[in-house]
Image (cartoon, rainbow, N blue to C red; front, side, top):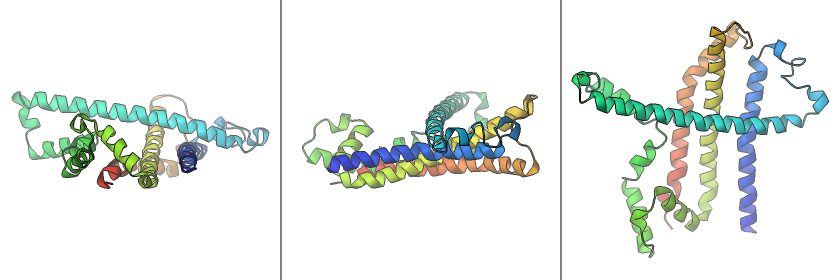
Length: 243
């Protein structure tokens, strides 16, 4: 019975996790898309014809699209950071090392490095908390702990402490929500930027909308920081609560 309830909870989290960003995208697009591209100002669909429940289906599908775009965003971001670090290492061994061997450059490089999706893990696996978790598993007669990956250690501790599931799902949900909203903000900014270079008007550009687009730009890194905080908490929770 408990397993069934757990599966239902996971299913609900999954549904809501896709519905919210998809529905948000519909609302924002309905706000910024030019009326000429809509059907009686109802954004692409005649809701009276298809009935109102269609918005749930469309939101869910768009949620998957946003999820895919978020994965691409993370991979692109990691690629850019890895490339920057390689260039930094190369420059530090050349005549141009003064560009990267000063306090300001090192601060900026470390700040960019912290945006990598695996940065928190690289720090955490060297912490005393993670070492204590591995020692705890060894004391419970588990072999090959030193050769286990972080996710393997975490999964074992998750299975030993199932009451942590709800907290973990909560923080993961918050992390995903921040990440998806950030993706939507980036998508809108890209659409607005595209309209500057092509002779096609599909995004509203009245003054109030220009202010809205400008406000989106600083929210992107803020949302990214919140995502990383909640994600790292969700990943560390099972390891910080040993049973």
